[in-house]
Structures are given as structure tokens and as C-alpha cells.
Length: 196
Image (cartoon, rainbow, N blue to C red; front, top):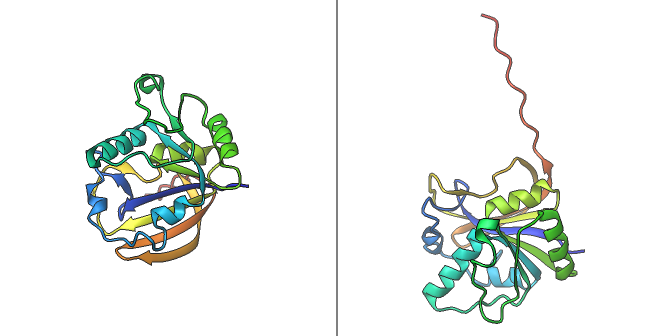
């Protein structure tokens, strides 16, 4: 059975993008494209992708800015809201991109079935990964940590989850970690006030 993996990069202080939704800080760090946790080796085991509409818009903008084509051959589900429906989002020529506005459990089931025995990649953003995790459908988090702090921006995983570290390594400038998702992290009980 396929794993559902949130595979991403983050700043040291836990942000996927800065306050202006830029990832320029990420591209300033050195990485071996064939090394540990690198994109192409990871993608070789992926059967389907799941992302939010903001991430999808960023990917399209990046491709347009660099002149690169859409390269994902795997079917891609893009979670949208009514305000950001597929009618307002462009689909690259020949791409198997499906715009959906619905329950993440149903969307995940469809995407996981399409992935077959390969992984379902939760591309992002953090809100989508948090929704998948809240539905107890996220198996792993694979994160490459860049040597930069941003102070604010889009958070890596905006939910309380219990993780178990199962692998660490390094890829040039990046510290790489893989975690199994173990469930929700309980809220701390309020501290009792001392007697005065």
C-alpha cells in the first residue's frame, strides 16, 4: 500500500515560504540533485500528487518565469475553494491536473488509489498537509532544512502532531529528516496558579 508523504523543504525556523510567498531563500542553498532527499530520486517513487491551489499557482508561476515545462507525469489533485475553482486556474497542456473542491478524505482516497503501490506526495502547502494529518491520512514527513531563518511566513505544518524521527542525513547545506506521523499531540493542560 502506498505511503502518503509530505515531502518539502523548510527554513530552520519552520517556514515554507517567506511573508511575500517567495522561495528565493531556498534556492540560495547548495544541494546535490542526486543526493539524500533530493527531488528526482524521491519523485521516482511517487504515483500521484496532492497540493493546494496556492502551491499550484506558485509552481505555475515558477515554470513560466524559468521557461520550464510542467514535468509531472503523475496525476495531480489540486484542492481549491469555490473562490479558486478550476475555472480560474490554468491547466498546463498535456498535464493530468484535477481541480477539486471537496472533503480531503474523499480526495485523498481517489489520489491514493491512482498512486497504486507508489507514494502519494503531499506537495503542500502546510495547510493541506495539516488537513491530511488531521484526517489521520499522513504517514510520513520528509523535510530538508535550509540554513536560513525567515522570522515569519507560511508555516511548515500548522497543526499539533506527534512525530517519530526515523532517519536523518545531510545533503550539502541541508539537514534532512524523515518522520513517521504518530497522531495528534495533545494540548497541554493549563498550569495551575500558585497559592499566593
